[in-house]
Length: 389
Image (tube, rainbow, N blue to C red):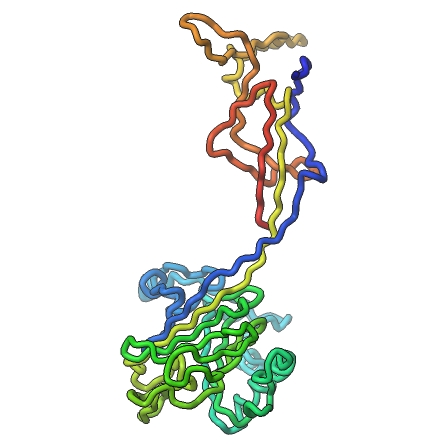
């Protein structure tokens, strides 16, 4: 039975058993489709919705989204970062020391540009161990050696080949597309010619090695995936089929489809007969805070809403005398089953929002209910609140 001494306070402290910290792990799907030297992210045509974010790119800070290029010949609508040259030598990383010293006077404005975008990059390297190939392999060697216990295909040099002499096709995926890591076993590559699937590769054993699952060379290893680092390294360079040939690089030479030319984005003619698909799942971890707010019996049965009373409170001041009505009648909103008859009075409120306060009683969050909850004196409720942090 409820107590006959109702409590009207509306600030309550969360107990230890009312607060839960959780981690939600999700694996969002990601697709890149490459055709005619252009990449498309999750089948979106960015050019049509956001002029300043190219297809296949993500606008990192959503700056200059949906703005006109130039509103007039003298007034640009685009925002941009800037600094003023001063004695502190503050500048942008894109401005060299020589440019800073010679091209700008003190008081000049140094401008940058927005938006900052990110997308995948695909780089092919020949059999010669020199130039940028050497830099890339030196940077990835430790990671390759680390994953070698999973499969010898990762090894920098093994019976499966020496990466310094192999032709390489390296696909770089920025972490903004996958989160903390790419989900193991989720990578799938597809090679199309005139709309027909001629080759498909996936990590069937979930050990990071990509095996061709369809096509004329089914079963061979075509490369490895560095799941935590966001790299796909294709090492197979043999032809997938010989019935088709076109220019896959910047020269006019025609080649048969092969994994070495997978995802080409620098073809002289755009490789119009070929298209490519990259599918994988990312891994994101979201920290969540779950709170249980209790509305117990005999609590929260009073409202500061003026309509809670039958008539407003009257007060007046005369000289040094202040008077306020000592009694305030609460409106009875309990419905009766009989016509022209008032039901027995019960304190009734409707809970529509739950506020969360910090230790200094500053309101930091508000949870709104879809429909107000009727609160009677003999009822108790528990509201489950969830915050992503």
